[in-house]
Image 1 (cartoon, rainbow, N blue to C red):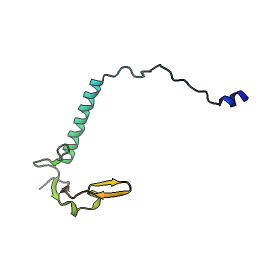
Image 2: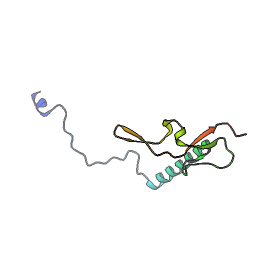
Image 3: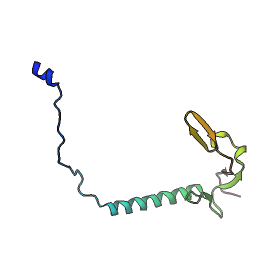
Image 4: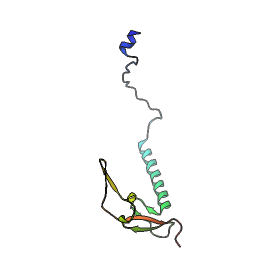
Amino acid sequence: MERLVSRGTHPVLARSSACRSLFGPVDHEELSRELQTRLAELNAEDRNRWDYDFQQDVPLRGPGRLQWTEVDGESVPAFYRETVQVGRCRLVLTSRPVQVAVAVSPPP
């Protein structure tokens, strides 16, 4: 018993040089293609859902479910303004126009 105490109760495990592949080899090119395809699908879904091009950061032109109106950043609550946190201090960035959805129903 003393012998275990002096050595410690947990044996020291040496690093094994064995590398285990649980799911077989990974085809990184195929994985990248699948990822890009899925990201494109998600972007298209979001674009159609919100009538907004998130890649270009502009509303879509033409009739849609939502009507977008540009408003001055100072006229919206601080929650919607861009901020930067430095330590414990949160700083509001310079004001820029903010896009706000004003209607969820189809436009008249």
